Length: 312
Image (cartoon, rainbow, N blue to C red; front, side, top):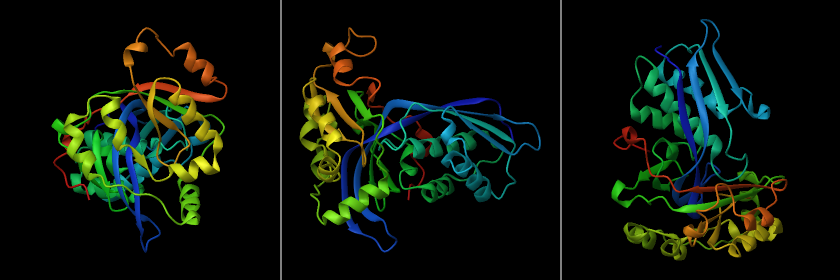
């Protein structure tokens, strides 16, 4: 294995459209998502370890520094798929994306680990096999192999990256997560199934309009998340975040994944440019001891090597 020190960015995501369709026999749902990477990101560092060390994993969040972490599982499954002995690798994950937030941090970390291995093993495995490994790790992992703006179908693992001319440009947005609240995806699905119905929308108008989306106002009519009604009902503190965002020149706050994080595109980014961190009104609305708050923007696809690989 040829492994110099490598530092990789592992971005978060939001769902511009999140539709849940028919339940599947395997316990998942058929889905129709429009997913979008954002600039909020973790950092993954990979380097060669001493011979015989195996896979050594550390994380800035000690609660995530276990062999169950998806990063470690990604390494194991990659070497298994490659039919190679596990390499001696040291991995460090610097977390910035909140955990259990609906932002896909764990899935992104796993995909970033797979892409790092592809660059540095002596014999990279075929792209199609990388996608198979990604899908085995979780429904969102395949999306992060390309990032940018993509359509996800199946159980979320079948990804159609939208061509570069149809990628969203960088649009500023505010991301807010209540610090002491996490909502697991299985819990959100349990609540949704108990409710028994949800309002799905077609992704077709969004896809037709995508070349013309340049700001918050143009996106607003198309944003949708099937989880929102039940999450707002069961977690009023999430609904309170959405209400506060609407008071802060933020366009149509949108639930991220199954929550509890809310994101909103900035209606007038020029109002924010004089503040190196966050405007005082935001700090007042979302005290840092109660909320994690990020001023970020949408991020286009950067990993072109996987765009020509099968993604299902």
